[in-house]
Image (cartoon, rainbow, N blue to C red; front, side, top):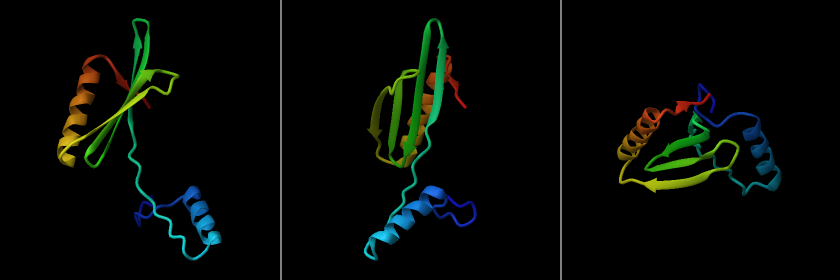
Length: 104
């Protein structure tokens, strides 16, 4: 996203717009914001695990597994965005208490 206009920006956006333009006037590309996942890792006691979480409106998605694998993904829907964010915060706090640290 462009920091001033809030519009999609960057090389891949420009490339998509050029492809759409080449395909014809009836192509109208739509861009959606993809939520960034927060990643946490636990390395110790013979374990090397990761846990990721992202919130998109009313959905909370977690992905977890051993570092170096694709892991398993689960998504849960909530009645509103506030409840989804509250659940995500609760899950993050649980992982931190178990010794996970946020990865860079």
